[in-house]
Image 1 (cartoon, helix red, strand yellow):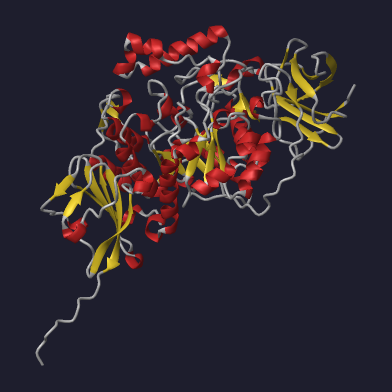
Image 2 (image 1 turned 135 degrees about the vertical axis):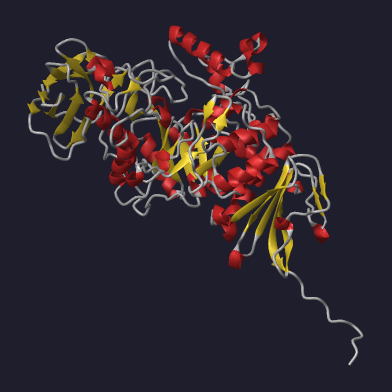
Length: 640
């Protein structure tokens, strides 16, 4: 039987099991327990011994077990009673209900010593779900697609949550093991291999993390102490985490330690923080601010990205810590998506209620980010958003699709199924050429036919409750609330629901025009010095009609750019009393790019302002660049 040493090694992680040459150090927070032991298991489930941990003054228990190495299975036994998985386990080979496994965090040989991280400017994010990204649904299989993402022009891969959760398929937002990658996606080192390979391709990797609640199945934190949670704050997904009540210090360390672990151990380039509005904290230093400071320290010399999702559109998460903010880098802009969705589909029911998809909304979003910065929001009958006029354009993440927005349609339909090809090409151009940070959702670049619905593999009783909750959520859309629609909604627990969401990669060839469109736009975004500057201060805009508008970049020495967008019918804009349409002195507008190119499936590109007459094709986007006007020819027959 292994023996326990009492002194704690100074270089061990704050929590969990850390393998060392001579054994493994264990540390867990269990303030209500009188005695904590590490109960070791054989792979057949039989016990292989116990090691008692020593109590610390703050409710932690720790100890060093000699002779215990990587691959060892264990649980913590509390007060000589039941044994539970480690809340900070590095791997759960049999899922969240099974034993935890000791992992050597240094077992992987990294090949990214020349990788120095990533900064926000110039990035293009690509969101994906590992389980549905390839037929195999593993991290190793996803490595084979990294070349595709590089050639596409993506620069940052955003992985949907990987924290250990129950079942054979799951979106990841039911995570309960916040230090362990989901065992369905590969072994304990699979994520390291994926990140290492991505860095070799010049791609950064960030992880979507959920620190506002834990999933309903496999969460054993209450067995250690109820102080992980609080009833003082409402939370639509479960109990809120205790970030500011009694014993909250250890809870904060648990969450911040998870964030640091992902970045430090897996060389991740940052995090996307889910639903930050539900990370309730009235402490002098908000948990997000503490997290951002400590995670950046954990990254060392590497630059990382921290991105917030915040449904109320509060910009405090991206404000400087010294100014009362939380120090994150960027924030999702749902307003832009909602306006785009309404413009594409013509429907504004449910939470699209206050968006109309009009030209003014796009001009404002490209210039100022959020559309609602404190105005009344009828859907929620309260003000929405906070002032953000001084926030840099790159700090807003713009998208036409993401996992939520695709899944919140009737059948999990991709947006190309809900609109016309011309309108989609035009808004794709606006999204990918605008000064904000663009994000694509997996398969969007080749108009994937696979839907993306909500899926979660739970036990039958819980699965039925989840299905009921899903039906109730989509019922906020009047058309989805009908009896026929409710009966047609896919059951999240069925394997067929999950399998239909897996991408068909042969469509890259069959839908080559769409893929060419995205590649060309991202190449143009990189190469054009005016667009790549992402400087909304140099951007002006004007509305030409309810569905048509122009955006003009002041390019100084690189010349101006004019993006002409028409989401409606052909517009004969005569006369043209809009100054932004006039080229700079001694210049003319040169056709640089058009969504109507036949190679993209368009009818043929034309200059919308040829000879100064503005006739703008319907459902199109055209980029013009200021170019020196040819010198006039000498007058013939001039007298002496």
